[in-house]
Image 1 (cartoon, rainbow, N blue to C red):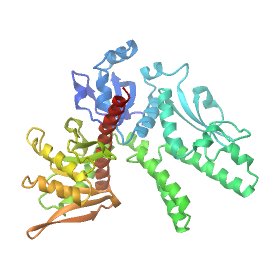
Image 2 (cartoon, rainbow, N blue to C red; image 1 turned 90 degrees about the vertical axis):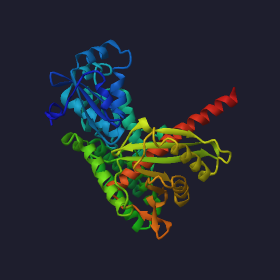
Image 3 (cartoon, rainbow, N blue to C red; image 1 turned 30 degrees about the horizontal axis):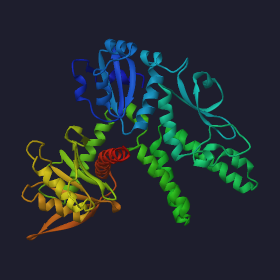
Image 4 (cartoon, rainbow, N blue to C red; image 1 turned 30 degrees about the vertical axis):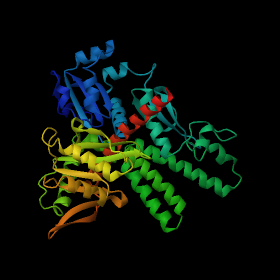
Length: 449
């Protein structure tokens, strides 16, 4: 593992070298004499690395950039994975500029204390010598640590306080649940045992995630949910389902950090597999589909008909390419009419097939009605179109039957192809909401002037 970064492909620090970096989450490493001098993380590698060359830097950072000769990067699947991998690699290599930039006199760590009710707290290195269940870090800033803990606490509530005589403040908002103070005040011994077991299970899950065993945690939760459902304990099953959904939201795809260390090209391999899987699924239904090199996805967003907007996002080779993203402000009067909004958007897109480029596949966020609108407006353009209905992740696929077109529903099987479709749909939602919220905010400001 200690030789991993030395063996990574390296990019020479030449003018504008950062323009070819991916716009994905990951870690980046600056090298001098083939040794890492700084390790950082970002949810957008291209934007973060570019910032070192597009702005005035603090003296220490400017000195680091002037020393750096090469750069390497490892893509990961989520911000959480980037944070954990960054901390792990800093711990291994102790890069010069990471050590100089540490908070206070010692680097920051996450400490799981060894107590009757283990606490999860932040600590300086001196605490490593104490009795702990686990110790993680160093994290380069307090901000990074709090991002990690905030994500985890919303899924697996925990205590960061010593035992007291009443429920803590966080117990009232569900972030210390069950609260050790309340457990200890319980008179029912059976209930106390169960609540303590539930608390310790939360700590165990957090430790596993910090160890990089995200997939194992998710698998175990899925088994527990199925068991609760079989026993008709639907309230518990729903609670576990919510935990799984939140975990998937912050760690998609779920990959142990160890996997990224062993295979720095893991994300690229996952993307290639997703593209192959999705193309195989679609080609069996759409014979004239030649490629899914460029996929566009359209989504409409509005709040009770106000400030309706639409988004077009573009994936090239399974990755988002924001150079081809577009926002549309809906102009038609019937702003609650999704079909009319879709028609307006595709009419405007059709006028830019030459200068924006032609997609190999269009995905419409919606069912048969939305797909029908796109089919009518793009008739004769020979661009494959599918819809993605929200219910059970169902694809709506136009198929020719004689002289008519029927819309077939296909339930997507779990796998790499479904993962790609979900990533595309989620990105379209995010992009549409961003612009929509911006318009809503501007409208509220205007009203209050």
